[in-house]
Image (cartoon, rainbow, N blue to C red):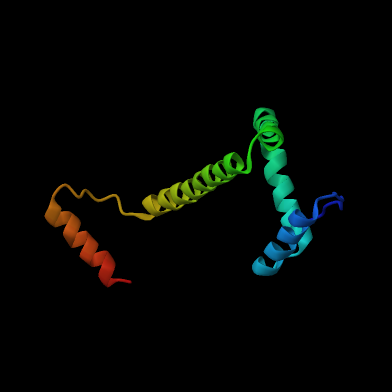
Amino acid sequence: MAGRTISAYTDDVTAQRVATLAKMEDRSTGQIAAAALRLYTNLPTEARQALRQLEAMESPEVLEGFHRAMTRLLLNAVFDSAHRRLMAQMPAAEYDTEDAILTEANRLASTH
C-alpha cells in the first residue's frame, strides 16, 4: 500500500510500549503507530475531544477504566462479527425441538 511517512514525538514510556508491542506482534514500530493513527483519526470529533479531556483531567484509575471499557467494546465487536459469519454459514433448517437441536449438535460435533 502506498503511503506517506510522518513523524511524531512521544514520551519514553509510550515509545517503549510501541517497541515492545512491535516485537511481540512481529511488526514494525511504524506499523504500530499507523494502526494507532488510523484508530484515532477514524473516531468522530466528539470522541477525540472526549479522549483529550479524559487524558488532561482524569486520574490514572479513570483512564484505566476507560481502557477496559474500550477493550470490552472491541472484543464484543469481534465476537459479533464472528457470530454473524457463523450464522451465515449455518443451514436454514428449523430446530424446533430439543431432539432436533441435539441431533444437529451431534452431527456438527462429529464432522470436526
